[in-house]
Length: 179
Image (cartoon, rainbow, N blue to C red; front, top):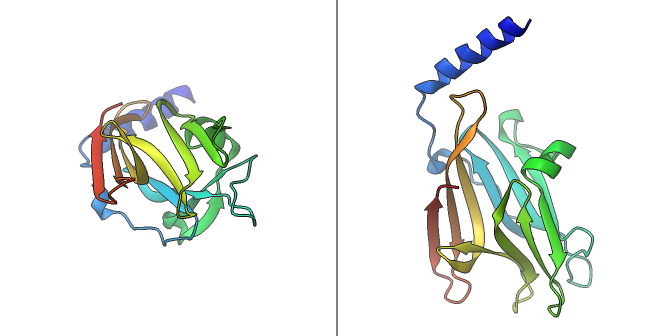
């Protein structure tokens, strides 16, 4: 049984070794939504993780869960699906805490990548935004693309692309980094 698993894994790794990963511009753009903060796509498939602000009737972020993360499963006809418990707690989930002295604002990080902290808040226009460090400055995050190398036993991240807007000027910004 173990040798069968090993042989299948080695065969898959060898098969994937020479496959050129797709670029971000080959992926579908999810439909816009009123409270959309940003989305993440990975080179492994077109399924997309969406992050929407949980806004209550009084235009405040939900204190227990200011951000709702879920899938659009493009490989399954574009159906919406909640993250599994493992995905929410280890991979694509967020950890957030209220920012003291700044009502309706939360600081947080991705559970899978804690090095860059973000802020989710309602801006001066009354819109929910996610501010994330792009090129060393807090910018409005809109899109993330993760290039994944699946040629080995465990997938690894090759690079991460970030797209957003300058919070002051509205100018589009971009950064690629290697974690």
